[in-house]
Length: 272
Image 1 (tube, rainbow, N blue to C red):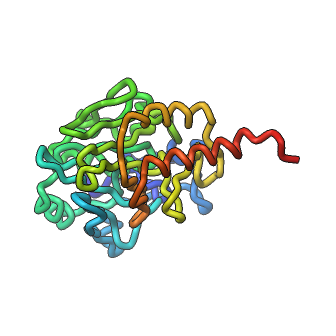
Image 2: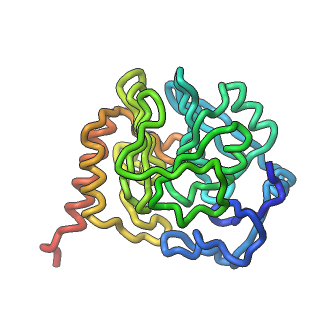
């Protein structure tokens, strides 16, 4: 792995060479740190005491994060299936010990990332495990470190394994994608949503935002499209982007009622 490459401290995305700015943070959905653009590297993070964190998050699902957390602080999820493990979403931190821990769990056959804020060190992870990284083509412009391991797909859905389907919900980013696992949660189905559908602190609900840090609401037409695409899929659990941010029961109903509530407020023209 390239432990010397520059990593944006605010979003945690790795670039192939030094540069002055981070386009992902300059976008209105993110922000440049209040002390200006700052950079780090995997070598610096390791020297500062960061280490991998690997813990079970659910049936057949293992959380992979960093301790202390880096950048946005999300954790990735290793979805363990008989046909091979899929790493859902991405973190910034990676070292030889974390590679060994993940390898002991069966390694990674494929990587899928919900949106650009979580691209992290995806190329290093792809190289470490010889795995393709699935990204929707609508987010091609945000790839910070181009590499042959990145596979762009088009359309509304993409089957990447037995019972594993990527869905281009289009929330937060045009290429924003979620992962449905039909065999997840002991056969009841699971949805891995990152913060495309963000599991909020009241874990009976999810949120829909164009920008979370800058509080820009998502467009109602985008949410309606996402609901239409999700309608055919059954799922009881919804795994969000942070540790224990999980809707544990009635996940599909939680998504529906969350969207209904959002649209009610977004379209309410009777308020004074």
